[in-house]
Length: 525
Image (tube, rainbow, N blue to C red; front, side):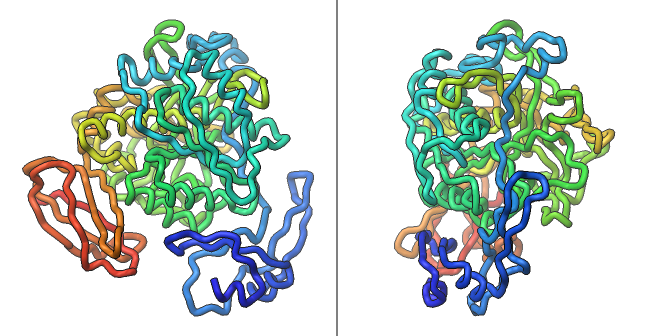
């Protein structure tokens, strides 16, 4: 902080854990401090100019810096949702029998399909949404009223100069309304829906991530914006989400199979990627009948999926994804595969942009629905004295590989996300695939398994220099509590060995210093 101030910068924001610093400064100070020249360029595909440095930034600073963001606005995040004519209507097929206008899905339709007979509503839970535009409160109220839903308390968190006033881009404000309305549809009893808003530029989405982590007010978080770039400052935040029991759901994108690898934002190993399906129910507003991988058939839109690519800054296959047969799904046994799960991606009815209404489609629908479903899981976990499920993937993959799979997930085995650039990639097959992951929830069976300590979920907190670690455990089972100082894991040291007598288990780490530590609990014989 002192270094930046000495070089003429103004500190505009910092975090309590001192891991992220936001500054502003004159161009001359930026060029001198970071050893570069800031230039303007005509954008090759958009009617605007963008700024960017002529070389990679560097600093005359002995303290290691993980990453420097905000020196260019070459690529802006885009919303994952799309409005227009329902895909199935344009193909001459009647909609899947939603109870909304024109057969679109809305309101309780999603609960009827994915949580039939479940009385949980998300009571006592909060959902946090990452948004890069504002919304109109009257749109949300109109949706709740029209779909027969209660008025969920909504709180805005405005960052980096955001005003809350929607931009002129209707798709941007539509994305925000869509996310809010889907989350409320699946979890209409939420104690709070927290909408984190920042302007759509300058890597402000990382500030939202950090604020979500610092607040720790919502245990289920959702993002339906698509990013064509990564930021090294984001990766530690995802790990912090996992450590404090927050589930982060990200839409997998709407551009079918990724044939040249997946961008880092959509394959991070601490994020749950949500693909999309085409849902059919038994009757108007009725229960689940069938699903297939979402693909509109003309090579333009469908469920995003693919393999992490090392040349794009990708990830090796995580431990929880190992042991899956990739013989028929086209996946990789050495690199991260996405998505992890799925939900319906079309056609949803949305009210947005100060009174507009109509069909929307995209994995933008699926991600906030999964956040809502996770709120149901955590409501039940809390009722049984358990911790929040936290990072979902270890649990989801344990279920997928175990005896509970058939009763917990609808296994999507029809359809594909092939496009004109990726012939043969990828098919929906039995078990895990790169169109829909493990599939979609069956309802109470998945809620029961996820909320009852299968597998381990953990929460880490620090007070007065002492770290407290709590995790859901199976009484009678033996555990080792381990820690690592390596951001990527590895070199795990045993802190304690114990036999659980109840759940959750609580242990303290009084040897903790100011150095960053990562914890895990491991079942032992």
